[in-house]
Length: 309
Image (cartoon, rainbow, N blue to C red; front, side, top):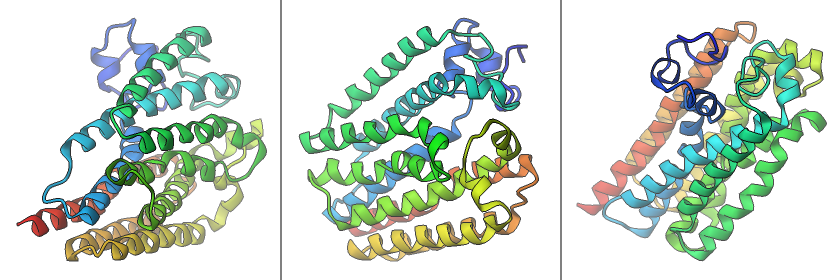
């Protein structure tokens, strides 16, 4: 591991071990050393693609759409993190977990980070242009929320809700790509993803609760405090109910609901296990949402395949 490694990245990750030295600061800006972020951005996209394919009666999931969503999620998550690090560089320098990030630690300048941001955004735009006009406009509208997110923690106790609006946008995109419009199932899925995002990012924010209080950063972790578990129960219940409603609207089969039930159990396990005063546990529970995302997606895929037989 290198001496310029980022404190909140896993030790011995592939960027620290294998990436050329000149690439590492940019890989860290894009969080390529922490893939959990693009997984969490990807899941609403893939859920929406699968939900739309099921509603459309397709015999197989659209693999081309899934592949494009994957590339777009990696590119736009990296662009979003880079933008966030540029805006938050002074705050990051004051927080123990983030002061080793590339900009506050001096590994890369804000100007070079801005150039890298532009390159990633171009990749995301290329992906977006593969879709229909309605989906392109829908995707571009997300940039307003993305641009607002880094400033939300300065003005509201609910920055996680703003993150939810941005990170869940894929819940609309898969439907828009398939049908060229938005219908109720997509909006219900979007709402489910927002509630899920607020929940898991509250768990994540508990790692920085004390430092955030010192520097004046607001969060649902600070707002909920010792009431975090009941708040999570409500948010996660809303996510399951709204997702279930979207499944009912498309007449999903039994496998989708089995996947949804497994998703609900995994979210419940997070609440039971949570100790907000244990930062390492908070990080593990946050990361477990990558596994949680597979559950409803796998159920939807099985229903698509079974219907196609």
